[in-house]
Length: 381
Image 1 (cartoon, rainbow, N blue to C red):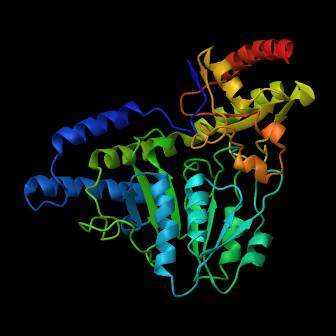
Image 2: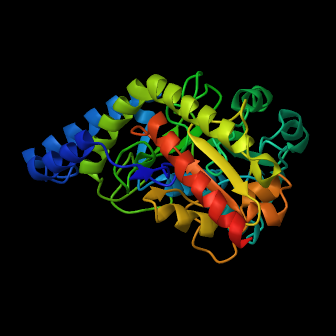
């Protein structure tokens, strides 16, 4: 089997699965309980929080555990607007955001929030100049993803942050779900106020997310109840998942340099092959400003879902574009659409995304199988 769908989800590390099992059996007390079983669970929870904070380069009180990237994104956006309701209700975002951001803002627009959507260039990247021009006195939030989940474009976070240095009252939220281990600069830029992560994108369990919230920034809770997570996110903590997340975050960051090198080698081999096919194949992922773990391309005249299932027959697993939208009928990639890609091409797009266990040898096997499919498709087109 060749699994090239790691942007959708990654296989959990054995160490994480073991940590979950041990935590569930040995630390079954509720972290909010006053007895020693509860205290043991609470101490383990806070140990995991400190470990995550150290890895992210922040303070433990700035780490909040959620159910995943979508909740973290929703909380950052809605929590900011609730907190700043009397200061302004204008949000700036990009045209290539994940549905958990895009659909959240669409819903808020219906309730009177003003949203400015920044355009992107043909590499799927926004402009710092456009951001500066879009800022208004009523602007309270800028939300832009770090790495695009469909084509792997890396946004110019440092340049956007430089613009926002002149606007200290505006919250800057970054969707970092695809970003763990992908940058030379610190995972959380010093000007970023809120940043979202999801454990299952870096070989952790599903159902666990992280929201970094800078200590001097305030947002309102979306879930009220028992007052967990410093009163900002009520619900009994997923202790087993949190402990596993702390473990795999460390492993992922330790392995990142070698993993990125392997992914760049995989990309180079695949790009060379795809480029050699001429104008019947178009590559959408940027080479210079793209993450090494994502490669999106299209074979003209062959719809994405057809290519996905044809590869699946050979035990190769890829996706169309976003996993969150891939089951929707005739769904055109929002990212490719924003880049100005014609629908006849975007409907043919597939995404290969690489993870910790992928190898150059798998890329060579993919090329061998895909060459056979090219010959097969040519006969029926």
